[in-house]
Image 1 (cartoon, rainbow, N blue to C red):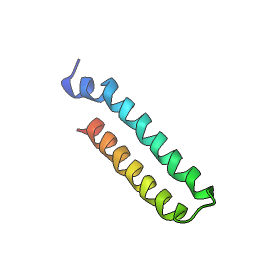
Image 2: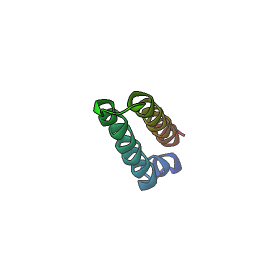
Image 3: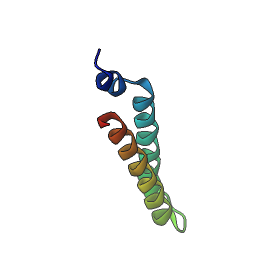
Image 4: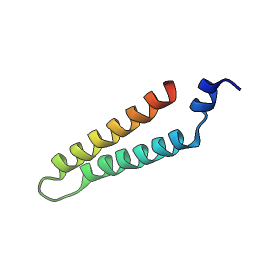
Length: 62
């Protein structure tokens, strides 16, 4: 098997994507919270999820 294909099929990349999706969902659900700074906190968590997801995607493409 091609080393690039083995890297793309690595289980760790997909675990990272699952974690990123979970972080993103937490950020989205916090938008509906009813406390001060909920929107700011949810935006920060959502951006962290996006950064982790992009890291996982670029690791697959590498």
